[in-house]
Image 1 (cartoon, rainbow, N blue to C red):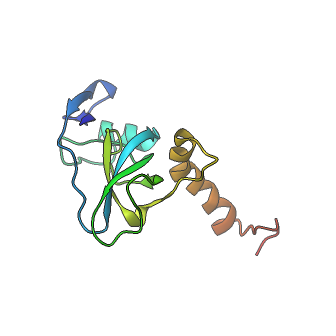
Image 2 (spheres, rainbow, N blue to C red):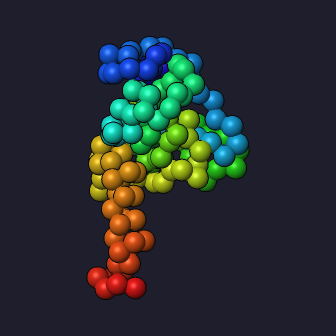
Length: 142
């Protein structure tokens, strides 16, 4: 499969399109065929080394949306399910290996691109409004 591979830390020029082995899911995991991936400052920081030195080579990409291709044992998603997921990296690829506790079914009304943006952007908004701002579904604070 194709991946955006970081072989050495630096700027965007340190990322190259490369071939990588297809992932195989273990128990509690799914392989997602990536249809969209979010790009954010955390990706730039990983590529530049601002997060420290990750094991190299490395595939960035922390938020994706796509279609489940295969699953390991003990999961509640099926091949063909449309999902979005939070990753510890590896999303800038044709396929991503995802722990099923880090994915959710994509709402039908959202495109893959919109769903990929839910992971960090939506999570940040939720935390600000609900967890910290104490907003409720009725528009009142809790």
